[in-house]
Length: 353
Image 1 (cartoon, rainbow, N blue to C red):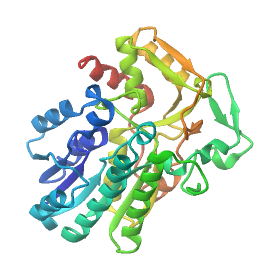
Image 2: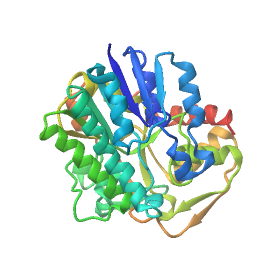
Image 3: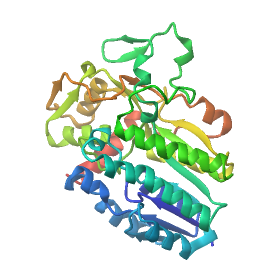
Image 4: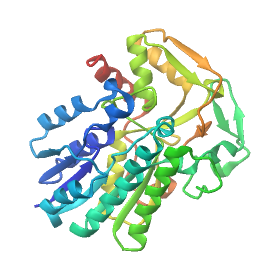
């Protein structure tokens, strides 16, 4: 039997992985205990999504387990053993603001939880491909020292610096920078996954995401930029822009496009490899531009305000350069552009608010 195991399976990338892999494997094992509700409140609970995927995919089996528990995770791995062919580890505490409230919780979920997953994979199914969803926050605030210029609705890279014309690549340093505590815990996990590939020869891959988005995102104020923005556009709830004149830029990758990256890696893994994963020049938006697009799609005027204080460690401009991944996997490309993704979010969120 061929089995896929997904952590954070009721979250955005986890549930997309379940849907994608359910057609390619005999069984998909999901691990998710809805810590997102603990992090961000009832409105961010993923329980609705767990119910949805449990009903939609007959070969899906759900486990309400904590990734920090060696005993609980080890028991699941022991049950399926070498039948597990791929591990997609998406479970995390994802907010740099929240991490400062409970540093111990943040670190144990992100770093210790990843170690538990790696060790369980090494012990019970060492030939499995291990996919880790890292983050662009491992680069800390180094991107803020790039040569940026202010335009009417966004910050943009100075055109005289051609190296960054396609965005930020994997050569950017993760040292000598302010990461936020969230960024630090993800660095620890990121390096662990690389090391299990390079030291133990496991088939591990690190994907440093920009803004990951899609219709099944349970967006909250502290995490899930586009989904929460769209939710506020639909409901009329107030939205606050934090700093940088609302011109801060993010690239956005649809959850399906990201999971398709995982699938390409699975078919030809390169142990310990690191890839930036985002919308790149194909799909990116500033805060102001995102608000205008939400207003266009919903037909509603958004209720937003501006706070002059930017979030600690927040990026002014971040666009992922995917040149390396596309060179390694030339048949991969984006499928969903920004507006298509946001229309999908509007359709989905409208049924839930």
